[in-house]
Image (cartoon, rainbow, N blue to C red; front, side, top):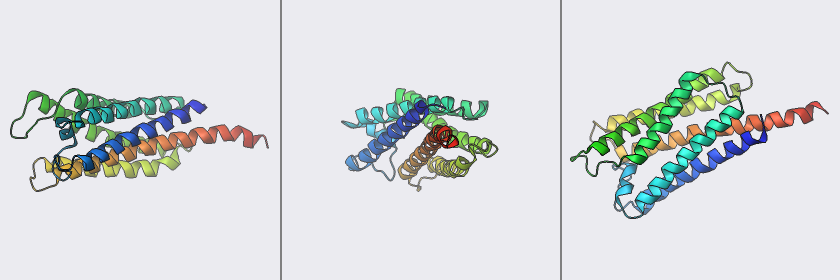
Amino acid sequence: MTPRTARFATLTLVMAAVAQAIIAGLSFGLAGHVSPWRDPVSDYAWHRGGRLLFTVAILLLLVAAAALAVAAQLAALPHGPLVSTLFLLWAAGLVVVLCFRSNFSAADPTVSGEIHRFGGAVLFASLPLAAWTLSARLRAEPRWRAAAPALRRGAIAGVVTAAAFGAAQVVGWLPAGLLERFALLAEFLIVATMALALRRAARASLLAPSEAAR
């Protein structure tokens, strides 16, 4: 494990935090046009200034995903093919959401809008499942065991909020917009938990030789 692990983990944290801050800023700045209670985050793309900021937020998340993958590789994080596949699906979901514009109105669906919705479903489902699977793997690894409980809590929050947001698609009185924002926050917590675990492991490995020499 090298100092590069900590740098990539820190890059992950910064990119994900800025993306989350952009979404929060849009929630306040465009509240008069897009209801944080009922409207999806992608509706910001239909308003002046919102499209650019929404695009930047998704691109930052993609950079965070790439940096996290590199940090995990450098740290030799035990994961397995299922976790890798779910993580790739999460990144693919982000790409789909970015490339295909959402429906302007739920009453007037388009092909692009329905592909966008499918991408959103994939990204909200895959990352919590990846975190849940990874947490189970880490519990069996002494070097990574301390990170498992927080990662599992993030996975549970992600599953619950994603399921609630999914339910809001068919239960009209549920606050779909608010639930989607909670699901996004849960995904940020998962990414942050993984990045912090990688950074702690990198720092511990760098301190170990100096302490052993004492």
